[in-house]
Amino acid sequence: MAGRRLRLTARAGGARRRWRGAGLLLAGLLGCRDPQPAIPAQGATLGQWVWSARDSSLLVASRREFPALRAGVWLATLSRRGDSLVTALGRPLDASVGADASVVIRLDDSFSTWWGTESPDTLAARLEPRIARLLQLAERGGAARPVQLDHDAPVARLAEYAALIARLRRPGGVLHDHPLWITSLVAHLADPGYGARFRPLVDGHIIQLFDTGERHTSARERELLARAERAAMPFQLGVGAFERRLTSGPTTHRAWFDVLPRAEGSRWYRGAWIFPGGAAYRTYLHR
Image (cartoon, helix red, strand yellow):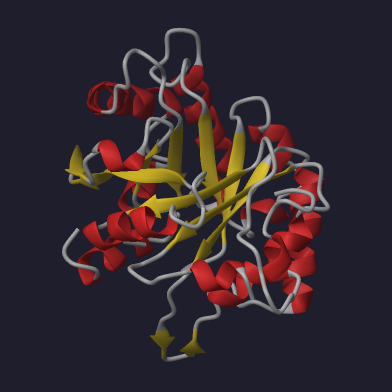
């Protein structure tokens, strides 16, 4: 996610950048005057990422309306510093996040400087002991907690990234027993081989639609859904509830909420994750 989580974390108090059928996002998103809460259909996810104390408070408040809201908790960011791998711990997994919370491990942009200079095997050897220690912190009574691996791999390095994931998920690998979702970019999906490359390795991917330079337009929305369909693998959408004022103009993060009900038409759609960036978002699920 192009480093945006770290920027948001600093701004939001010192710590970021990451339904199907009638029961999903629903009445409000379809334009009813008196919207009802958007309840995900069975098998789909409505989740919120937790990157700060403010996000934790929003999670608790939003669950009053959306009781099934899942948490995706930023566990740590792994960065390159010189020739070393450095760990920055994220949020604690307290009782408020729930037993079904996923954990997010981010490989930031500095990690990409190793692509082309170190093999996937060497990078896996660097990562495995760090990830193993992090997952020990996230234990939930012996059950394997779902993991989201967040990395904005350069398009030219997708083959190497897939090889790295294959090493981490091999029998005996640190992520072999964990449900695993990876973040993806619309630019990644322009690669016709994206689905074939990653489909055998992960449970699905979360397409990031904030802080990636993607401006919402009807044409871009159609292109996104067409690319996701072509990949032929389970996907979720990552939307942002915050906006930024950039020199190129304001962002259009919140406009991407409108794509959620239209994505329900895909057999590969598995729901959505919301990155608050400290901003309330429940009204965007009803507009």
